[in-house]
Amino acid sequence: MSAELEIKLCTKNLNFYYGNFKALENINSEIYKNRITAFIGPSGCGKSTYLRLLNRMNDLIDGTLVEGLVEIDGQNIYDSNIDVSELRRRVGMVFQKPNPFPKSIYENVAYGPRVHGVKNKNELDHIVEESLKRAALWKEVKHKLHTSALDLSGGQQQRLCIARVLAVDSEVLLMDEPCSSLDPSSTMKIEDLMFELKLRYTIVIVTHNMQQAARVSDYTAFFLVEEVDQPARLIEFGPTDEIFTRPRDKRTENYITGRFG
Image (cartoon, rainbow, N blue to C red):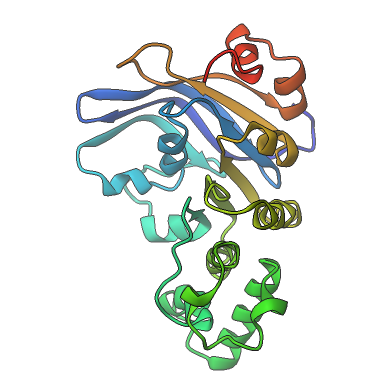
C-alpha cells in the first residue's frame, strides 16, 4: 500500500447472516480515502449486501447478524454507542433507481439539512446551491428549483439524489449500480462527476459493468459465490489496473475475461 493512502473504511473477519443463512464469509478489506473503489462479480455474489453493511442499511432487515468488525476512521460502526442516523449522514447512499422525494428540487436537497437542524433560509439556500453545483446539476435546474423533482430526466434525478447526499456533509458515497437505469449520455455525466467528487469524498460503487469499473475506479474488489447456498467471499482486491490486467487469482481472471458470470 502506497504511503499516501489513508484507510477510510475497513472490515475485519466479517461474516454476515440473513437468519441462518451465511451470506458473506470472512471479508477483510480496506477502502481508501478520496479514492473510488468498485465492487464487481456475478449477480447474487454479495456486492450490494456488503455495500449496505458499510452504513448499516441491512439493520432494516429483520433477522440479520453481523460478526467481525466494520470500521470508519478506526471506529467500529456496530458498537452499541454509535448513532446510526449520524453514521448514515457520514456514509450516504445512492441507489440503483433514482428515488427523489415527490417534492420540489429545492426541497429534495434542503430536506436533509433541515432534519439535522438547519433552519436559516439563507444557509439552506447556500447549501442547496453548493450541493447542486457539486452534483453538476445547478446550471440545468437553477431557474426551476421550485418545480417537481419528478419532472427531471432519469440522469438528472440521479444527480439530484447525489446532491441530496452531499447536502448533509457526507464523507463517503456508497453507489449501488447508480447508472444501471440510465442512458449512455447520463452514465457519462455520472462517471465524470465521480472523478470530481473523489477530490472531496470517498466513493464505493457496485457495478455489473466491468468497463465502468475499469474506467472510474482506483481499486477493485472481486466477490464470488462458488457454489449454490454457499456464502460470498472476497476473492481478490487491488489496484484496478492490476485486477484487470494482472489478476493474481485464476477465478478473477476467468470472470474478467468473460469465462463465467
